[in-house]
Length: 301
Image (cartoon, rainbow, N blue to C red; front, side, top):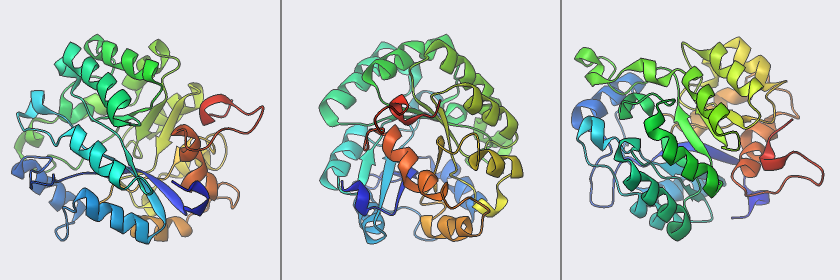
């Protein structure tokens, strides 16, 4: 991957269909998400199609699914398939994995194997879909392994379109995605690099507080058009968190084309834009080393 040739790194995209046509969500939850995001066309690109899409735009993309088999009973897309397909498109795709923390010791073994044998560069958690609180000690052995492996953990935060409008929200509880629960994880695993995904409605201030206080906690900007960003998020991105805010689209539900078009109109300082679009992610993911004497792991002090 030639970082200098890339225009941006999208740290938040979803593999929603396997090579065999298996979807990442049940039809009920998938339909609710499509309705919520008004994304009814070309909704399920394959990973290979995603590679072509991002290559055309001279962008890289982090790709993952969500393993929520315990809570939903729906079989996941294989982490190995995602990693192997991304490896075939390593000029533009970066594989993350998702391992259901309810799987206990098996989850820990799988996480280690995925990093050491398949080149996975991070892990995605969606507490609301996976039905666990991030600070539940049940998940701590998995965090410990991820911390030791030296790769990031990305947590969905805030409201989710998945289950929206379905009676009972499809069983999905929003409370699990309050970013303050991730604060405990940052305390108990001080070297773990963490990404709080999305503007964290209705807990935006909590997310900003955690990211400001904990040196290895970042925020990605996926899932919302920038024109809807809360003003305090823009203010912090321009100042205290300028080295810790990351471009993410949530593709395919939101395209990078739409996101970047709206981002151009946002009042972001010229010197901050390239950090958000590429440089912060490049350092976090180990794609670019920090400058001599600079902060470790791409995080401002």
